[in-house]
Amino acid sequence: MAAESGRDADLPSVRGVYSISVAAELSGFGVAALRLYEEYGLITPLRTGGGTRR
Image 1: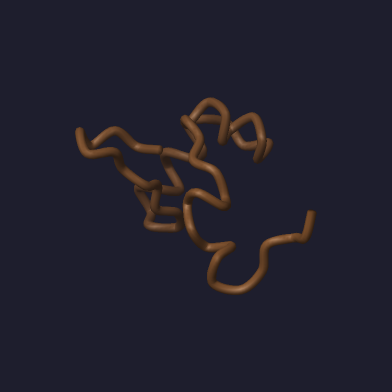
Image 2: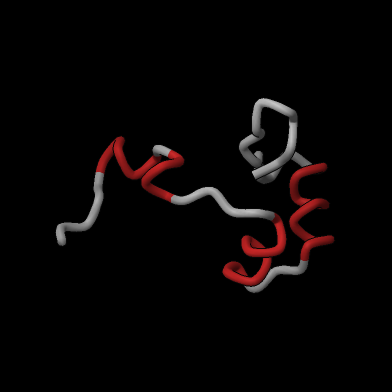
């Protein structure tokens, strides 16, 4: 299978959308650190229609 590249790699369906706990596990950062990075504007999680971060 070919690797995704270019603009398509930026789409959530290609990158994957994860809960905060899965994102923390995959990144090696703690949940609190990810929330702090969000507060400082370093990362911006996607949100569902109901406002839940993903």
